[in-house]
Image 1 (cartoon, rainbow, N blue to C red):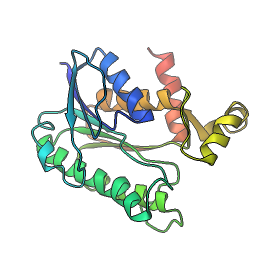
Image 2 (image 1 turned 135 degrees about the horizontal axis):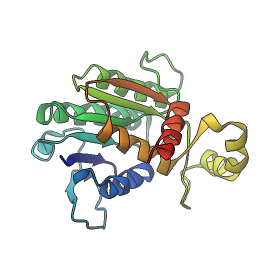
Image 3 (image 1 turned 120 degrees about the horizontal axis):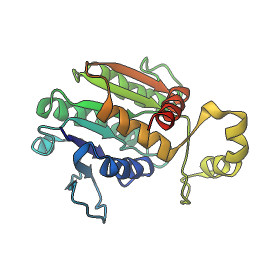
Image 4 (image 1 turned 30 degrees about the vertical axis):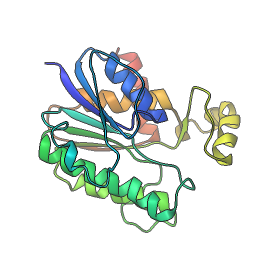
Length: 228
């Protein structure tokens, strides 16, 4: 039976690839994209839902009913917003969306774009790590049967874009060398997206929880290439 998939944050870098792979996957019958901006594309499988306030996802209950899986890529960059806003977007939005998803589709699988160093204990000195960890902790205890936590390190954009800050510009410049010296600390944006879609749609038949570090994601990508 064709699967019904939700993609959150499809206007972002990883979310854009996620949407593309979801639409191309023959086992996916419908894709509901939920975001704050219009995608500007059309597709027979695609239903677009605009939602401006992720602090309250109650209005999404109907759109999230009878879904098989969700891939959540909504987020923001450290330094792009205040610390308070970073926590709201990173943890608050995620927790609220998952709450409504569980009510509307209690058997849905959930793939979450977290990050390297995410700390569910809340002890990290890095705000991003604390807030991603807060989101992870809530998801793992939120009652969804299958939760897949993805913790990529540096995500290589693949396609040219305006980098959000100097650190990203530097990493993009040294990427050819960095990926050779430290392969388990980099992942292509398209490979990451493909892995998130694949496990959400084709995951285990029984409930499971997986926390996937960068090396685990790379192993998933290599395995999928050996077994098309």
